[in-house]
Image (cartoon, rainbow over all chains, first blue to last red; front, side, top):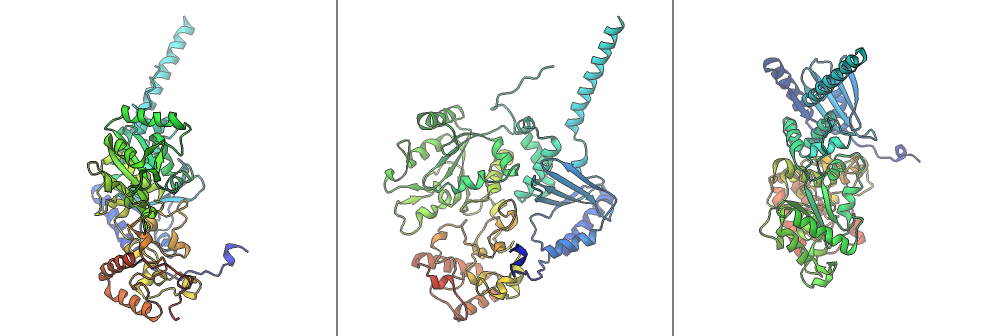
Amino acid sequence: MSLNDIPVRPATVVTGNLRPVLHEIRHALSELMAHGTHGMIDLHSLPFSSQEYAALDEFLGEGEIDLTLNVLGKTRLRESGYAGVWRIEHFDDNDKRIGYFIEIGHVPEILRSQCDDIKEGLAAMTTILAMEEDNNEDANT
Amino acid sequence: MRMQTPSPYEQTLGEHLRSQGISRRSFLKFCGLLASSMALAPSMIPKIAEALEQAKRPSVIWLSFQECTGCTESLTRSHSPSLEGLIFDAISLDYHHTLQAASGDAAEHAREEAMKEHYGKYVLVVDGSIPLDNPGYSTIAGISNLDMLKEAAAGAAAIIAVGTCAAYGGLPKADPNPTGAVSVSDIIKDKPIINVPGCPPIPVVITGVIAHFLTFGLPELDSLGRPKAFYGQSIHDRCYRRPFYERGLFAETFDDEGAKAGWCLYKLGCKGPVTYNACATTKWNDGTSFPIESGHGCIGCSEPNFWDFGGFYKALSIPTGASGKNAVYAAAAGIAAGVAIGAMNKKSKAEAASSHQTVTVEELNQESGS
């Protein structure tokens, strides 16, 4: 007997949270256009039924980009059919979704190279180039 | 250039996490999930990242008194790499008599050393209630719980009372309270105390409170000393079954058509309307579900005296002893009353607590039509 054999069929439920979230996304997108403000909506702690998640997915549609990062488990970044609106889904090592955000911006924050990493990379690159030049000078003498 | 490795106590949390191989992108993900778990706006994520990056690894002393170890199990059984696991690994847990390898004198010596070295700075976590009737009811290394709590509290920066036993007395305090059990806040009056109730509490709530203390200091607390970020809304407010409650659709038994369709469990004794906790959003078992999602009503375990509410299967607005048609009327009145139901429920909860009636098998199988 599998789980599907258990005769439990949840009735359709509507929490009423979908419509306000859609308007929040539209508002954030207009803020991005007007002032360049980066927006983020946390869907994880909102009561949402599976039907409403499906309706949200259908409304947003699919864009051109679908990326998966390997950071503390997988993170999937999907641009929606509306440019600048991204779905960010965080998963743990067992591929369970542990976070779900809608991000409104040119690029999701997590995708940008972090300033401290760039600083460390620059320092490392400078050291390596200096060492190579030293080695070349030694080889030429 | 060779970098000097800082000692564990000088390390910041950011440094510690990176030394564990956690990249800055992973750290950003971690902070995003942390903000989500603390019910903070996503705009707070950069602030959390900045504060955590600079926060020093705290020394934590964990004391276990009259308890079942369920709170520790809740925290340590979470799957890795979980958010709570990462935070728990990032603290310096200097004393926890269940988890530490040392025992006997060596364990107690570790506690004394940590208290001396970090006097005024360490975080004291307590799970379990404290017996006042007879100190011999619960001792550690021959020291009574009361004496150990007072001594450890004196040098603590803050106390986190984990679990309903430490926060409000819990099961040991249930009528007739044979050991004279009391909560931490009944004894300690001169230190900030954060209550993290639940039987057990949600693991990420335990670590989230520690993270909040490290990043932004003491969290805002409700009238029962609980952080509003996690306990600000009732289970009922965030329950995905609430639309059924609004429409008056209730399961009458645990296996009727309403139960199979996932209707509201209010009439089967769900304490969601008077229980403040994050179960409905944070969920349990790696985010799988929470009790109501598994078909059982909330038992109200994060509320004081929840063992003495009058029965896990008694509908809230029904006075103890009422059943059958009265239950239907009471539930209907509850729907119509709207907000007023909260006050009504609190009253019936208090009445139930004072009468303390036991639950029978018949009540467990209650049918509203009977």
